[in-house]
Image 1: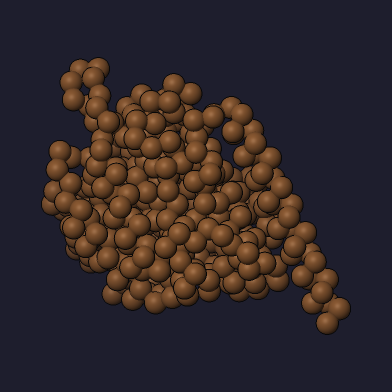
Image 2: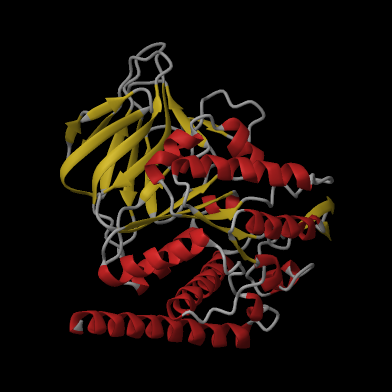
Length: 423
């Protein structure tokens, strides 16, 4: 009993410390950026959300007793591929609760393809620019998976080197799973680690996985796809694991991707998802769906529900948080932009989806200040000149705001006093 009381006190002290940090940040944000609607920086969801309640409980178990494993996945378009927003949330979580970092999870060597940007927390080098396939292509020529993107090698000299680049967090990789396939069926990739050639420990052609186990931790390795004449190998993902308890935060993003790009053009989406097996998914897909002159909200909702169905085949208890579209503008002429009112329609769909799936909404549109607010964010050097994306500083601020809403809900839930229910 005494041990349980001490543990409970430690948890409350830790939660209080985190909440104080969040409040200090909020005060600074309020003073510097008065146009931001900080009162909207909450998670809106129903009392009866069994999946979210179960997730919050499990989160408390993992962060307090360091027992069990939690998997969070953030999926979206260019906001996610850039990596800054996702990594800000990841580092806030993993550095606020010491000792809970598990593995890095699913990554992709984006910059191995032409004109493709890579998250900053891992470095990618390559021998040559490889052939790129993305799910935004009208008819992708390669079979894509969860990552929604692929690079293809056709030459024995082509290689990709990946180096983890986040000194604050020890991901301690001991198992690397390469996802991909050879159309000719006779190419097996290998890894060079510490100047040694390492063949796969296990190959599963059905799931298109090449598994490499190591006796020591790996933070830098080279992927070689030894293709001879008329051979090829297509890489669709890399999963970094250490099989330790704790928290894994995976981010999946493709520039320009919409809901139908993930659902309709990624046949191995669900199979790859079995590696991630998320307990919580942060959805950030929607800006590209709503970017055109017309916006079919019914199709938008259906596509989301299909993605959710796929996720639930992997984990029926998975919880969902829907991040609404940010305020955006459309370019209507040279140096002339018009506010995109489709963001209001998308926002309504996100709230409906949250009700239908027992999920939550983080209302980024409202937090920004509503319709036309991107202009103020741009003037404050938080929004990009294209009036769609954010600057690195803007993405970091959004990551902090999401973390504040998330951690406040965790602490409220822990003492049973949450007042953020809006459904």
